[in-house]
Length: 219
Image (cartoon, rainbow, N blue to C red; front, side):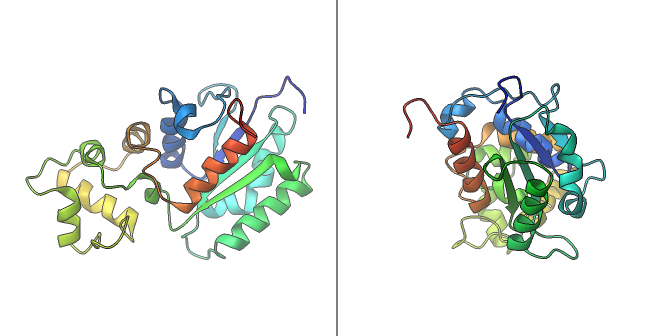
C-alpha cells in the first residue's frame, strides 16, 4: 500500500452514524481507549468520513462499492457501517458478505475492508447504564433514567441494553422535548465509556482497528 494514501475511509448510512464515528474517533485519547495506534482521521477534510447522500441503510447495502470506488487511489482501507434493521433487510450475514464481496470485486484487498452491520441499529452502541447518557439526552427527572425506562417496559432489568434502542432514545427525547439530532449522537459517542459498550458490532469495530493499527508492542 502506498504510504501517500490516507489510512482509512469510513462510509456510513446517515448523519447520525457519521456523528457517532466523529465523536468516537476525535475524542481525547481515543486510541488509548480502543488500544490501537493513533492514525490520521479527519471527518471534515481528506474524505475520511463519507455519508451516503441518500441517508439510508439500503443505499449503502446496494451501492457501497460504487460510493467507495473513487477512494481506491486515496485510501488504504475502507470500513462500511450500517444498521441491520430496515425494510427488506436480508440480515446481518448477507449484508456483510454481499458488501464485502462487491468491494473486493471492485479492487479493494480482502484484508483492507470491513463491514460493520449493527444489530438492530446504531443506538445500541450508545445505550449503557451511565449517567452521561441521561445528561446527553437532557433528562433531569427525579427517577433514575434506567429505572424509568424499566418502568416503561423499554429496558428490562435483566437486559444490558434496551431491546429497541432507537425507540428508547426517541421516547426519552419526547419526554425532554428535545428533537433528535446528530449533535446528540456525537455528544454521546464522545463522552460515554468505550469499554462500557458491549454491542457485538462495536466489538468488531474495536478488533478491526486494533488489527489494522496495532498499538506499539502489540503482536
